Length: 77
Picture (tube, one colour):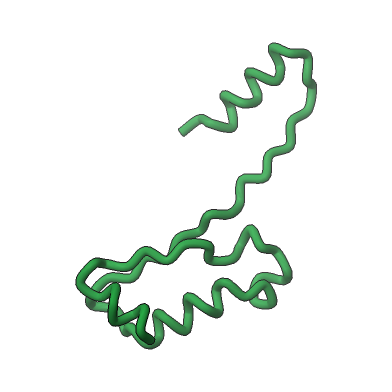
C-alpha cells in the first residue's frame, strides 16, 4: 500500500513535477476446486485474448493460479 505515493515522493525530491504510472497488469485468475473447471479453462484463455480488453494488454489475464487439487486436471483441459 502507498507505492504510488512513495514513487511520487521520490520523484518530487528529485525535481520531477509530474509522474504518470502504469498500474495495470499482472492480473491473476484464481481457480479453486469448487469451480466449473471447463468454464474456468475457457475463461482463462479468453482473458488472455487482447480482443476482449479493447487491445489493452494491461487488462488481460496474465497469471493462472490453480489450487493444487485441480491443477493437473485444468492443465489437461
